[in-house]
Every structure is written in C-alpha cells, then in structure tokens.
Length: 185
Image (cartoon, rainbow, N blue to C red; front, side, top):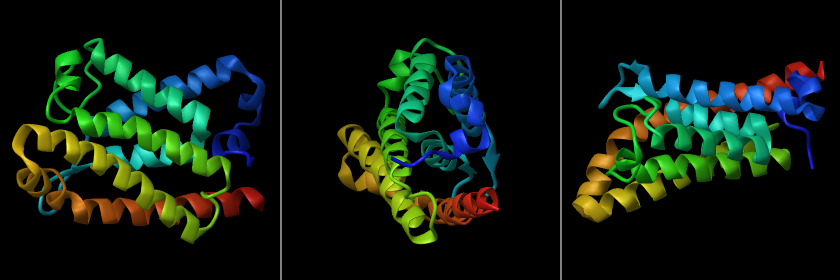
C-alpha cells in the first residue's frame, strides 16, 4: 500500500486523529465551496465539484476520502447548505441525488486507487480519473433516468457536461503527477 499525497504533504497527519479530522472537515468544506462556484463554460456553466471529488479521493486515500464524502452527504442531508442548490434529505433523494451518491462512490474508489499508487503517473492518473468520472455519471444518470427517462437523462445529465469533464480530467492528470514529482525532489 502506497502513501497518499495528504500523508506526504502533512506527515504528522498519518498518526494524528485530530489532524485527520481536520483534513476531513476541510475536505468537506472544499466540496461545499466547489459546489457553489460556477465557472463560465460551454455549453453549460461548470462547477469544479467533480474535480474536487476526484482529486480529494486521490489525495486522501480510501479511508479519509470515504469519510470526507460521507460527511459531506450527511451535512447536506441534515440541511446544511453544502450542495449546489438546496439541502435536506428530500434534496438528496431528488433528481440530482444519484450524482451525490456517485461522489461518495467515486471518492472511495479514487482513494483505493491512490493507495495503490495510481496518482503518481500520467497514464494511471488518467485511467483513475476516467473511472471516477464514469462512476459519478453512472450513478447520476441512472438515478435521473428514473425521473425523466433514459434519453432525457443522457441529454440533460451527461451530454452538456462532457467538455467540462474533459477539461477537469486533463487538469487533474497534470496536477497530481506533478505534485508527486515535486515531493520526490
């Protein structure tokens, strides 16, 4: 099992429950902020939330990423304004609920892959990011399809986001291996 970026950048975190707790809280806050900030993009504005989901997963490793994702969903379910729009259990169960559940699944899988060193080279990071993004959209589109039908779910819940997701994946594929190279120096 490989070390994660979080433990390499903040070595004291490895053995400190307080430091791990602070990382989880900070990660959840970063997820909430990334849901609120919109970047003008074509064909729809984008948030950096899927980027943050995938990169946090790869940075934190399986356990911390899973707890961070679960905390984020719990905060939203309890009514805290952490989601892009809306809050509460009803919102979590609404049309976008599948994407939110997909965030948790993707974070856990990204963390698992990071624990196996997939975040250190361009090709493995690319593969991991594609897997994580596919999981988010698999859960999201499948859930949305139960509300609006499969064709509409693909048209409304996947197609408009492809360009933005490609951009975010490229950004992650550049960032993570670069940070590892800098750490090794």
